[in-house]
Image (cartoon, rainbow over all chains, first blue to last red; front, top):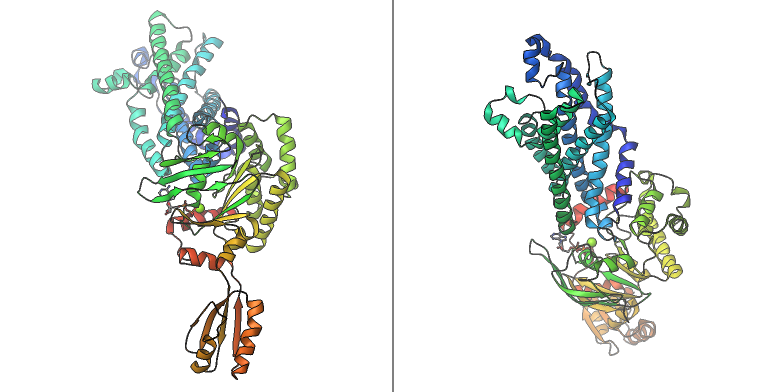
Length: 267
Length: 329
Ligand SMILES: Nc1ncnc2c1ncn2[C@@H]1O[C@H](COP(=O)(O)OP(=O)(O)O)[C@@H](O)[C@H]1O
Ligand SMILES: [Mg+2]
C-alpha cells in the first residue's frame, strides 16, 4: 500500500528518538505491577479454594498481568489517534493529502506504529514483572508457542484499540475531545472486564457485561497461557474462542479503518 | 494547450462562506502565474482545490490534460505543493523529510538521494540536510518547504504565500530562489501572495482575486498601463492659483484635492510636466510642491478592488498566520 512504509518509519523514528514516550507509556503499568501486584496477597485469603477464583493463579500479580498488558495497549492506543490530530493541527497532514499515497495508509501507519510500541512496552513490562521480588510466576510448561500466542493476543488487542482511537480522530481537530473520550471509556472498559477481577467476584450483571468486553478476551487469553502454559481441553476451548473473537474484531477494524479513512480523512 | 484551465470552480464551506466563486482561469506552460489578493480573498482555497486537498463544491478544472474530479491520483503525481502552513516535521532531519516525500512517489533511494542533494544545493541548504528541522531558522524552514514541493520533479508547482511571515531581507532572497527554480527546472509556477511587490517581481501574469472572484488578469505592465496615465499632484499658495492650474488643457482630468491642491492625470508625466510648468509660468504662478506618481500595482489594486491591500485582516486568517509565525521562529 503506497505510503504505508515511509509513514510507519516516520512514526517509529519519532518514538524511539524521544524516550519520554516510552517512559510515559511504562510509568503507569509499572506502578500497577509493583503496587497492586505485591499489595494483594491471594494466599492470605486461604489456600487453594480462593486461588480457584483467580483461575488458580499463585499470586495476584500473576493473575492480573494479562489485564495490565491489555490496559497498556488501551492507553498507548490512544496516541495513534492523538498523533493524527496533531499532524492535522500542525499542517503536516496537508503534505500527505496532496501526495499520491493511499489515504488509509495515513491511518494504518499510525496503528501499526502504535502496535509496535505496545509490543515493546509489553516485553519490558513482563521483564520487570519477572525480576521484581515475589514477581510474576510463569507456568513451567510455558513454551515458545505459548509466547507466540501471547504476542498474537497482544497484537490483536492493541490493533483493535489503536484502530478505535484512530477512527475517532479521523474527522477531529481538537486534542481535548479525544482525551475526554479516552477518559470516559477507559475506566468502564477496564473495570467491566476480567482484567483485574475474576468473574466469580463480580455481581452477575457486571460479569455478563464483561463477557462481551474485548479487554476480557485478551486478558483471559494471556492469563491462561501464563498460568498454565499447557492448556487442558476446556481451557483450550475457552482460549480458542477468545482468540477467535479477537481475530474477528481485528478484521472488522481493518475494514472499518480502511473504508472510513479512504473516504473520510480530511484536512 | 494550457497547463491549467478552471471551469466555474467554486467552493462553499460548510459554514456557508463562498470562498471561491465561479473561478475561470487559464495558466500557460512554464509561466509564473500570480494570484494576488487580500487575506480571505480565496487564494488558499483555490490552491487547495487545484491540488486535490479539498473537493470543489461545483465546477471543475483540467490540469495538464487530467480532470480534477476524476484523475486525482494522476494529478498528484505531476504537481508539487508548498502549502501556506508549514508541512515539514520538526522532529525529523531535513533529509528525512525529503526522503519520506520521495518514498510517497516510489522514487528509488539512489535517485531520490541525488535529487535531494541537487535541491538542497539550489536553496543553499546542503550543510543543513542532516540537521533536525527544529534547529532551522524561519527562512531556512521556508526554503526546505519550497523544495519539498520539488522532490517529485513536478510539472506544476503551487506556492501558497511562499514568504508569509518572513522579514524583508529573507523575502527577497526567497524570490531569487523561486526565480532560479523556474529557470533551472522549467516548471510552471502558480504563486499566491498578498504582497504586491512579490507578484510584481516574480509573476509573468497576475490575476487580482477578491471575494473569491477574479477581477482582472494581465501582465504587471499591462495592468499598470490599463490605469492610463500618471498622476501629478501640485500644491499652490492660494485657491485662485490652484484653479488656474486645474484649467490646464493638456490634462486627461484634473480636480481640486484640498483647498489649494490640484491632482491631475496626464498621459505621460515625463513630457507633460515641462509643458505644465511653462503654462503656469506664463501666468505667473509657481507651485509650492510637485509630486509625480507613475502607476504601480498598488493603484491597480485600489482601482479594481476599491481598497488597499493591507486593509482588514480576518481574525481566523490572523490566528493561522500568527501560528505560522510562531512556528517559524
Ligand atoms: N475550512 C474553512 N471553513 C470555513 N471557512 C473557511 C475555511 N477556510 C477558509 N475559509 C474562509 O474562506 C474565505 C477564503 O479563505 P482563504 O482561501 O484562506 O483566503 P486567502 O488564502 O486568500 O487568505 C475566508 O473568508 C475564510 O474565512
Ligand atoms: Mg491563504
